[in-house]
Image (cartoon, rainbow, N blue to C red; front, side, top):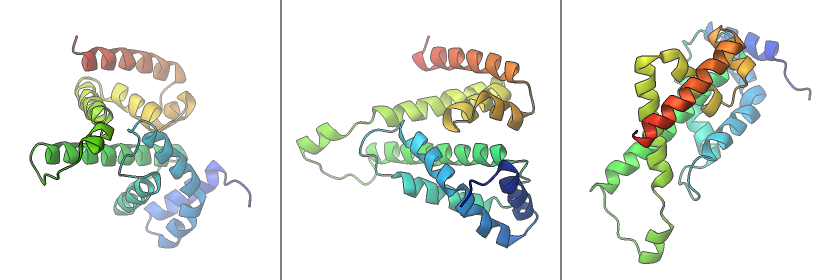
Length: 189
């Protein structure tokens, strides 16, 4: 089977957003591998032994995408940008809920060996990054979106420029500024 062209995917996305359910059935096999790669990229930032696995992240994102059927899809890059955003939300929500549980929710006894294996650092980093991105979005939504698309979505500079309908040079300026701003914000300086 040949690799689907971006135009094939875009046509199916447009048909789906116009209510054609069969388009979704044709679309999923074409984008599943890319969604899985996207989820794998997202999970690479998580701690080892994370309870949520890559396939579960894809499935949860798929369920949320189905609920978002009213989105007016522009193209393939827009679809993957929204997918990346959904995956990020799923992981952040998961990390926040685990942190709530650790503060006295359903407490479970663990052995010292188990406790040594548990690492909360990455979950805390993800929550801190999400908080910093939200703060950046309040100041400059576009720069926040650039980080989301490039870092979480794995989109290239050109794909990000296409999704946001701005030049690649502007994307690079926004990317550099946002990285510096986020580093400063997360370090507490």
